[in-house]
Length: 260
Image (cartoon, rainbow, N blue to C red; front, side, top):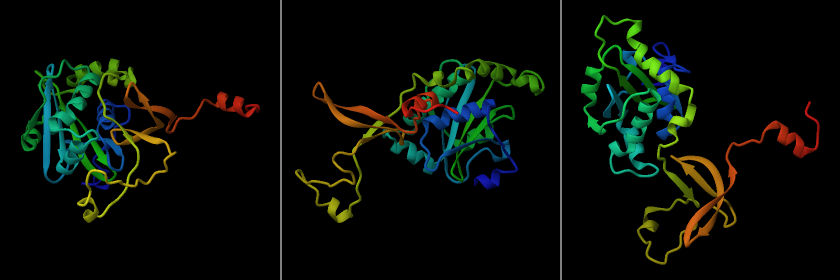
């Protein structure tokens, strides 16, 4: 299913609760082309093709993530690599539980994606992530079954719980562990050359010796730096934050001109 297929069936999540949930997942799961968060209808909620799923109970709510097998392979590959899909998505489920104000998260387990689709009630919250043009995963938050006929009031507990946390912004993610990788350089080699590698072999990288090292978080470049040694261990001294621009007042002062 592509983003075009969803055009008539979804609304951009924006600042809605589904948007907060989707943005939280997007911040922790690496995308290949870049995430777009949408709020699907039940009929367009799940990706197409072979699927896998994980989930856990958080207080009186259930949080599930259904994703394509291709997306699952990228989660397993990292960075950093993980041993199982449960390990790769536990931090995401915990972060979603925090932003919606749910209780502590129980053990995360693998689920049957068919059963998840069949058992998702109409009052569940759905947030889908499109990677480029492909719907790759959906986060499903299932509140307790309402004791009265479904109505707008049925959504009040979960909306009210999330409203207070939404104002906290990224603070709810401060304790989430994320993989940080320092990349010295890359190269491409024919398989025949790789098979001849042995202790003492030298691989030439695509980077000058004086060039800065890339600092990556979940596969996204966030900074550049230089290698240092701290107590006989390697470290990185940050020299540049990617995308950072000083405040306008500071730039004007440095240039010795007047702001107009």
